[in-house]
Length: 87
Image (tube, rainbow, N blue to C red; front, side):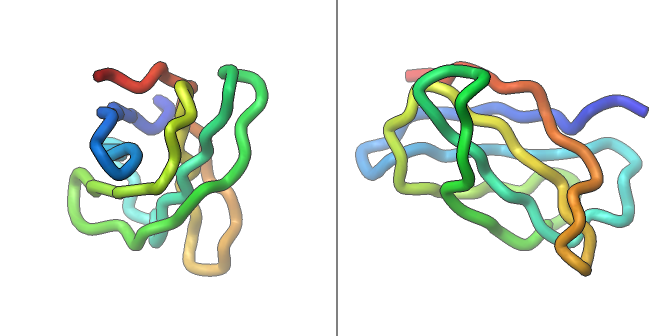
């Protein structure tokens, strides 16, 4: 019932996002959303789920990011809260 967890760090080439969702077994892919504010986000990349925590490198310098958990058909299962990218 909890939302997916997210952490993000700025890198020289963009942003590294870490996504996880405790107990969720239906997640096939993570979609990263990014934008200038927490309520203005758009998709900037996807990555297949790789175990408990998935590392996703995206080319964006947007200050806010969130992740969406997608099932095998591409349906959104849940969306994390937006977080500010750490430096």
